[in-house]
Length: 32
Picture 1 (tube, rainbow, N blue to C red):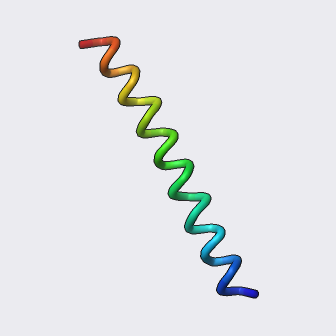
Picture 2 (picture 1 turned 135 degrees about the vertical axis):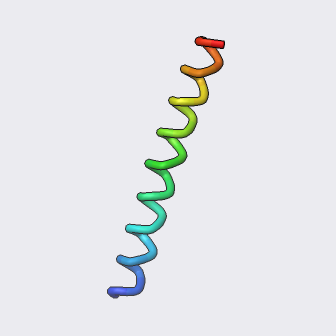
């Protein structure tokens, strides 16, 4: 169970980081 939870936490962090990256990339494209 703990292994599944660790994998879920890792996937969640990766998803958040990806969304943040997409958000920042769109903003920088608008500024350029």
